[in-house]
Amino acid sequence: MNVTATSVWNNCLAFIQDNIQPQAFKTWFEPIKPVKLSENSLSIQVPSKFFYEWLEEHYVKLLKVSLTKELGENAKLIYIIKMENTYGNKEPFTERIPSSNRSQQVAPQELEVAIKSKNPELKNPFVIPGIRNIKIESQLNPNYSFDNFLEGDSNRLARSAGMAVANKPGGTSFNPLLVFGGVGLGKTHLAHAIGVDIKDKYPERTVLYISAEKFTQQYIESVKKNTRNDFIHFYQLIDVLIIDDVQFLSGKSGTQDVFFHIFNHLHQNGKQVILTSDKAPVDMQDIEQRLLSRFKWGLSAELQTPDYETRVSILKNKLFRDGVEIPDDIVDHVARNIKTNIRELEGAIISLIAQSSFNKKEVTLELAQQVVEKFVKNTKREVSIDYIQKVVSDYFEMDVATLQSKTRKRHIVQARQLAMFFAKKFTKASLASIGSQIGKRDHATVLHACKTVDNLAETDKQFKKYIDDLSKKFS
Image 1 (cartoon, one colour):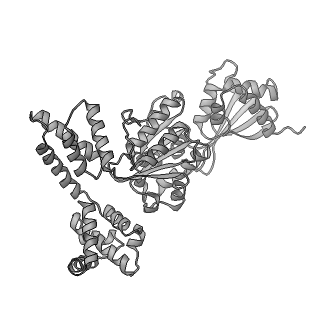
Image 2: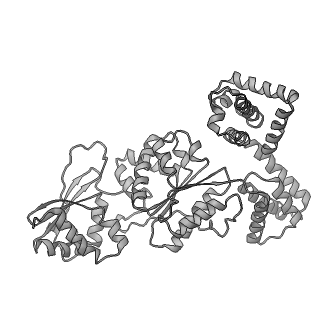
Image 3: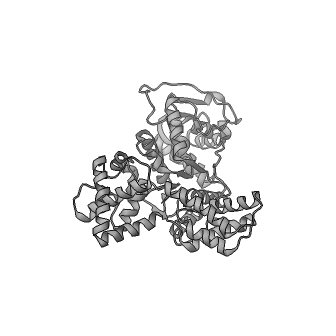
């Protein structure tokens, strides 16, 4: 029989697989590649020095026994550490690292390491000391749970998909799960709730929550310190990766590239990826197509503005958790007047309770009206040009790209002019800024659009109805 590196290693794997947990085998032995067999020495390739150190720390005895069975008492194991895409290091160099002899079975001289990298130690980007006892904190907030994420028509799909993922991370077709929606609708809450539930059900899984902004900062730092490959490998060890506000990666080609490789590795290995964004993949700008296509592999679930019944439930739940009682007519007033998002809804009720307790006033309808009025005024100021374009596009049953296009079709031109009109009315943006964001037009086009809308409002009943309908959506 022709004995090769592959055949020897496969026999070793069969023995190792019988003696360790399946998850450990998949994580630490499947990525290893047999490279060369020379007499009684087997060379194997591992993806980083961290991998080598982990094997030596936890599995050196098992490796020694399996290799001795195949190659005899003088068997030697040589690790080749090859990290892909290492910057500025075309010529490999070799360094001998003696074993620290943690197991009495292996003498120090039996380990020889050829390092093809200038990054001999894996750096945890979360700077957790002690690489051998690496502990990845999940960064999750336990206060965000499914119990206090109330279900309604506006979030039923996203919440149900989140619960399915929490029950079977990496084992559903919702991979990745992308939750998107406007400000304050509960994207971050839901992302944490999924992670918290997974940690409860599967304590052995490594779950990590991180904002896209922090991820980008870590990546930039890794490039500066020439530890890019360690950064990649750290993230490839995660079982459930939750990235919040993924739209923050827009225009950052280096970060997108590294995330692309991490995403591919996790997805191919059955790990779960959860993303949140303020817009659907189709509306994301300056994100590479290859990434957008992967975002669409799983499920994109929208969180919409909660309806009246859901808003009442949210308020009552908040009051119940805080041990406060407020008359139903006041809850009703707050729920009817604050429609934009849940954060403001809860903020208004907190403000109401605070005003009452600090000023020793009874919570009355009049006090509620004062508080709500302040919130509604603030909300009006916060309407963005992106939001206006989305509302106008939805109203005319077209997508934002059509609204911004160069077409001169009458109904599209009118929709575009209305978007410009409302942007001027509800935002503090300059005419030039409005024009550049709505299809890269100039300030003169915006000025013309506003005059046209004013004229049509006086002469065209149907157009006047458009303005009235849309005005209600922004009020």
